[in-house]
Length: 286
Image (cartoon, rainbow, N blue to C red; front, side, top):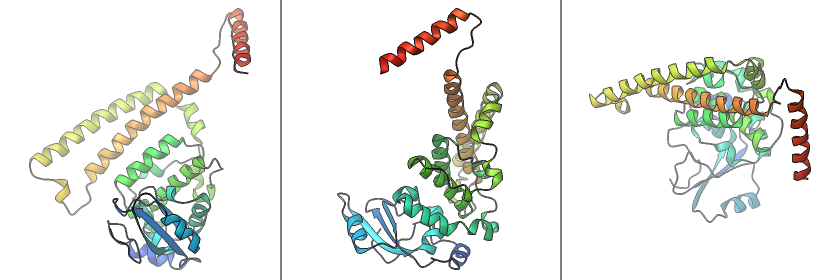
């Protein structure tokens, strides 16, 4: 990667449909300064600064790690955001808010651009209290299989992560009502742990069969990597593995929640002793 006027992700230029739509929005030509580690791919950014002053650029370039840098503009950066890995983490929360304010209209203005995201399940329900560990898992799957149609879901997941990082309320304007409801805790309260574990077991079996199919095709020379068409089997397997991981994480979260609930005892003396133990713990910690 070399310094140039516009840092473009290695997977190619943004789709023209995104660029054309973003070009109509106020602030489309806002300068964007980008830096990336010199020994990394262009998909990994270390700094993203909007409308930078000279001092901002100088400060961003001061690094012990060799970097390359370049200027872009808001419309180009937004149109290619789906290709970058964790680009939101290279921004301040203020710049992230500037970015989401700019891109938000496209969610309703050009919904056809987001048809058939891969996978659709990762953006179906994203309540404001969605656990950070599950957000990170879903982002990793989307980053591993980047598609333009995933732009909206990637931005929404990034917003949940930024809200958690900076300990602020989620910008719910970026989500639909259906995505925000039910809340995570409402779903957790209704969750049947035994049923979920059975579903996870069934999913693991299905994923195992799909993995065998992929390996057999590779051994026979029908390698997905040489195909022009999107590798749906590998994407499906990634989603299955993701859902299994989510199932394990949800079980751990549910078990933690249950362990925090006060134990119900039919013996009043047990309850009384429990209260004394709590008081003792509190006094010791103080």
